[in-house]
Length: 237
Image 1 (cartoon, rainbow, N blue to C red):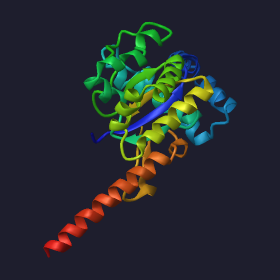
Image 2: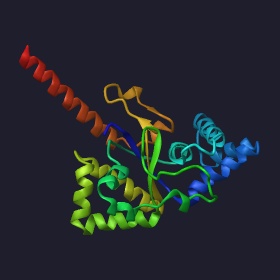
Image 3: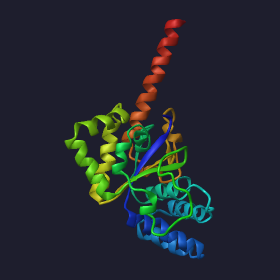
């Protein structure tokens, strides 16, 4: 699938501190509190402004907008202002659970995470571009890591989807979340690497916080595909 998927280590408490509470500040006209929070975490001014802009958009979200396409996506974006996130091309738990519903046991729905009840409809899946996907709680992150080590079927299922070396990136994301005592949120198109011209890659968040391992794998894959196409066209010439 042609999705740019990213994985964001973040706990429910951090969602509250970095998104849900600042959202109320914006609604109350207290934007200076957001900038103070950003400064407290050492976020550079440029990204502090992007953080503020993201919250402004979040505060303007209508009640009928899909949670996953609004608040869920914005939470993934703001996570990347605070710490690293991880990238894989086209591989997501949302796609895994479509074929293997038993993996639901590793995921927590938004209504169990948000500090207040939101009227917005929730899919708890990646359904299109610019959308959050499933959320693994801190306990579920630990459980999945354990099962990847102890249950060959789990590892096999994940390696089938996170192929061509991407499983190492997923493990890196899960391990980072575990070390932080955080959960893991997936989203799509937070970051959009350009495999032909990497310097033209873009991100709604902090591009420099995107772990490069998955991006390099994507570049290698595209380079191999281009070499193959060029080779075949030369054979036909």
